[in-house]
Each structure stands twice: as structure tokens, then as C-alpha cells.
Image 1: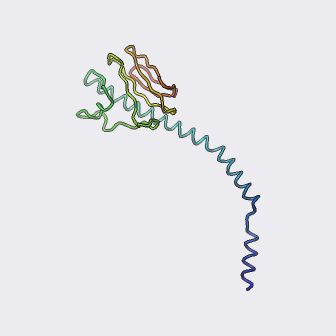
Image 2: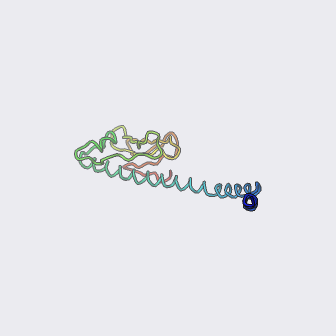
Image 3: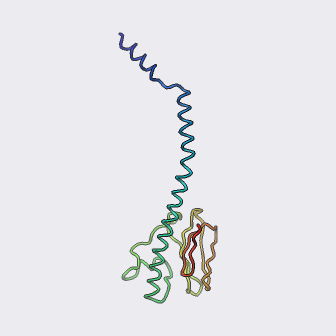
Length: 153
């Protein structure tokens, strides 16, 4: 019969009070408030870096296509459907709902722009016959073209 009393006494000694739980929760909340914005910023920067590298890869394939055919592809899917393909698979845009990078030719098909919608998820770009790129639907679009590169997402 002495055992239950001893067990109860140990439970009382090693118990946690409500105040201790509140202090611990407050400290963890404070640390999370400091860490989470940095994690989100690092994740965003990582996605931007990946998008830029993938756009460079697509741009290289477009330029090879142009060297072989003297034309720019009408769609990015032309890069994977040729024999041999210029790319085996198109990379996916981490920012886009559709997961596809955007591609636009100038009206006379002299210039092109490839783009990621960017962090906002709504950016796009177009190019005119002079090679001037215009961002539409937001300014967080990340793009590359045969005449310019956006370095500020």
C-alpha cells in the first residue's frame, strides 16, 4: 500500500504547472515568429533560382532549334517533339497553377520570350517585333528572351 502513495508523490514532484506550460508555449511562439519569415523567404528565393536555371535551359533548347531550322518554335512542346528532341521533357514552373512556363513569339516570329508567372502566380510577358518585352498581369514575372533578361522578380 505504500507504493501508490510513493507514485503519487513522484507525479506531484515532476508535474508541470499551467504557468510553466504557458511560458514554454510563449517561447516556442516567439521562436517560430522569428524563424518562419526566414524560411518562407529562403523558399521563395530557391524557387526563383530554380525558375531562372530552368528558363536558361529552355532558352538553350530554343536557340538550338533556331540554329537548326532558322525559325523559333511556335510552342514549347515543339522542343520535345522533334527528332532528336531538343529537350526530353519540359521543366515545370513552381509558381504556376498549370505548372507550365509561358512562351510568346513576336507577331512576325522574330523574337521570343519565355517566362515564369513569378511569386504572385499571375505574371505574364509578351514581346514585340523590336524585341521589347512587356510584362503584363503583374510585375513579378521572371523572363528571358533572345534580346533581354529580367533579373528582378
